[in-house]
Structures are given as structure tokens and as C-alpha cells.
Length: 340
View 1 (cartoon, rainbow, N blue to C red):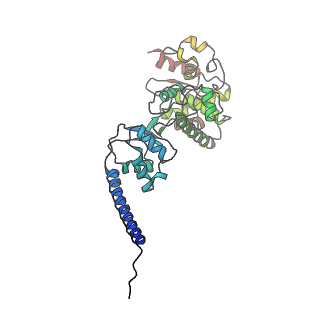
View 2 (cartoon, rainbow, N blue to C red; view 1 turned 60 degrees about the vertical axis):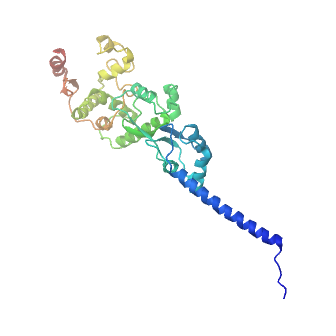
């Protein structure tokens, strides 16, 4: 019986297909070995700090090459896609403290392990102090540097005469390379939250009409003393004076109105020169806060001590002595001020 032979072209095709398949397996294996070696070998970074912007893995890879984090974009791009990390990369500012392998770098970027900075706003700072510290910080993006105060408030969506007192003193953690506007917005939102809560819990006998008036009064308390026990008493003195229409006569407000021309201590001419902040020549509260206030000053402004005192004078040790009438006050001034 005759045996049929397979067609020559079919046999050749099968062998060729087999070789191609085998070659693909070899290439895939070689690629896998190469990719593994690439992924696990520490990179020679030319920078320590770098920034990743959003826009897809190819854009990220190009940014890393441009900044000297990786040498070539293609291997990093391939590793990111093979491992599925390409869709997980997070924008931000990053810091490399020691050499990373490409895999470790991908983990860092996909986990959003961004570099942060600590920025502290201090109770009693004026807005000029805050802005100076903000503009001199090398790790922030200074988007507000060329803005006027009015432009900055408009950018933040704040309706106010002045930025003074509108930012809560605290320690903030933000990504390096973040906009200073982001920090400003956070500090303002925190102050607004604090103020709303304090206003809602105010004492029933508080005569202030608005939360903003409370913020102004709190700033006067903040600048008058750093002694916790004296804050409610000083607030009580101010509350008594406001109730009877007596001028507040608080030196920190006058000093704020004099501004940068003040050279050392207040002079008599400063007390007599009228400004919107001169509480010796004008009745009521100043038009704006004069400093950033903390929780304690806010609490004191909205929970004044029950006192008959109308005067106080600093003793020079951080505390104050309180008086019910002018004779007592003059005696305290002679004892603690004029004898110095």
C-alpha cells in the first residue's frame, strides 16, 4: 500500500513556525532577564530633588531623564507598563536620599511618597512677617510674590480689607515645590474654621457684633500679653471699655498704625498722631486685626473675664497689674514704668 507524503511547503511552514515560536520564547526570556536586571540595579542619580508633573507615563519618563533621575526613558517606560505601574504614578515633589533601583523608583512614584516641607506660622506675627517668611522659602513656588495684597485676597476668594489676621498660626506640612497660594489657602481655611467654632461657642455677654470683630479684639489680646492667665483679664478690660464707650488706648494698635517708621518705643507724638489704628485718638476697635492670633487669644476675646478693671500695665516680667480706676493705674505706672 502506498504511503502519502506530506506536502513539502506544509512541512517547511511548520518548522519555520516552530523556530519563530522558539525564538520568541528565547527573546521573551532574554527580555525578562534584562528587565529584571534593569529593575533591580541601583540608578546613578544626578539629582536629589525632582518634580513629577501629571500627564501620562511617557511624559513622566521624559521628565525623569531631563532632570537626571534616570538615564533613558524607554527602559523605565517599558518597566512601568509591564508591571502595571504606568497608571499609578502620582505628581509631586520627590527627594532621593540614597540610590534607588528603577523598581524602587516606580514604587516611590506610585505610592506618592512625596517630599514635604514644614512651614510654621507663629502667633503674634504680622502679615508682613508671614509674607517675608513665605517669599524667602526656597522650597515653595512663589506664585503670589508679585501680587499686591488686594490681588492675593482676590486670588484666594477672600473678601476683606486686609490679609492681616486671616491665617491661623500653626505648623503646616506641604509638598516641596507646592504653590505658596496652596499654603495660604490652607492657613486661611483653618483660621475660618477656628473662628467659626469659637464664635458659635462665645459667652452670652459678649458685645461683639461679628466674628471679624472678635478676630480684631483677639489680635489686641495676642499682642498685649503672652501670659495665659492675663489674656481673659485683658479681654475683660477691653470689653468694659467698649461697653462704656471708653477708648481702648492699647499701644500695640498704635504701633501697628505707625508702621515701619517706628524706631523703638512709642513716643508721645505717636500717641497724639491720628491713624485708623490709634486707639488713643479713636473710639472702638481698629479697622482690621493687627496680628495673627492663636486659640488662646480667640478664646479670651470671646470669653472675657468678669472684672471691674478698666486699666492694666505691664510689670516687666510678662505679667500685668490691673486697676479699677485712674488713680490706681497711675500708681501702677509709677511703680512699674516710670521707675525704670
